[in-house]
Length: 443
Image 1 (tube, rainbow, N blue to C red):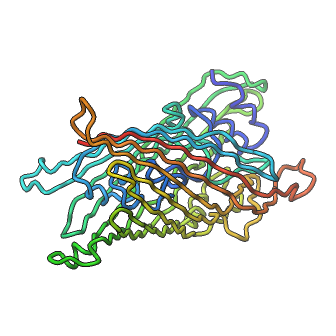
Image 2 (image 1 turned 90 degrees about the vertical axis):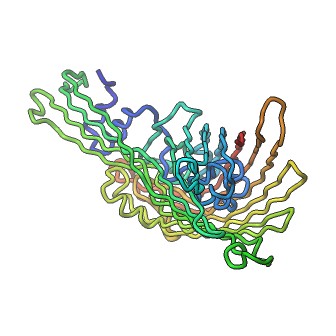
Image 3 (image 1 turned 90 degrees about the horizontal axis):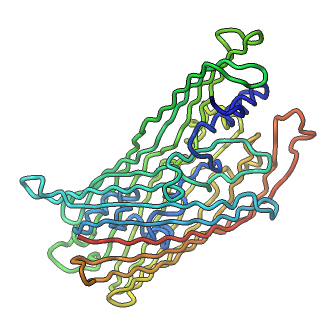
């Protein structure tokens, strides 16, 4: 028998049942419209550079940020990483969310050129991440809130991306990848009495993968335009990538019959809601190699307005009046070679709030969002030779800090018991600390 709380909301309306029915999932998390790869980064280099270097990073995280970058390093690699994000998100100075996000990540990259007669280089890679160090593969939540909830922070569901890259022409590489998310559905049919006791239950839960494209192109300008002579463009790289929108979605169909009160065919309740939305993201990056240092700048365009269409069928958030705006995020980073082994990375970014600047409230859901200043620092060490290991090993650590600016929101509700609307006003503030480490074996 399913737990009684699932049906305790039958007399409280469709949306309340939706929130209770989400207990069918393996885990419940803080509702959000962000995801770890775009909110924080994946590997320590991405986190330390505030994602300014991500579009040029040839490690396995390239399969998410820019698959073309996989062709920049001919070596294969096996990568294991961990991420821990501490949140202290506040409303009117009071912490309303402080649950950490914790991920374990694994990635692999290899050269498949021997599979063809031409031996043309073809690089394949995949990267996966699981929340709560593997304990929450289907973390999901969608809910209303009386005190406000932040739109882009929280635990993330299973992350999986795989793809490949190849060299097209002198200095030009291209890559294609797919990101996998899960769209789940649950069907429940039962007989119950007014006390919530159930009989003859039928439950069917399923999930299907949804694939979204990621494409990228990288170019070494000097190798392309002056291949036979030395010129200043030899040290100049440009890259362009596109990541298709994605989300996790849950559809719930529930039907109950209460003999003597609700006869056959019973009361039907249908709920559709989404979480962990990532908009279409287009990024353009420029990197210049100064010898012992490298500087990179990336402009990232995030098309958040598409979320309006995605919410049209959302039975929890569809009537909340969530009006997002498209944003452009500038990112800047620099790398320094401290010696033959150690590399220091510094990065910064400024991210505008995805909720429209004139938006003061989102009915019942009460989303909060604010402009963020992001800074990062990281250290990498590539150890050329370790006893007993034939290939180099790379160790990375990264740290990222988010500071949320102040912004006022009104709290609103359709609850008849609410004495006035808006019934409160809150001001955003808070900090996020992200720590990451990885070990990479080259082969």
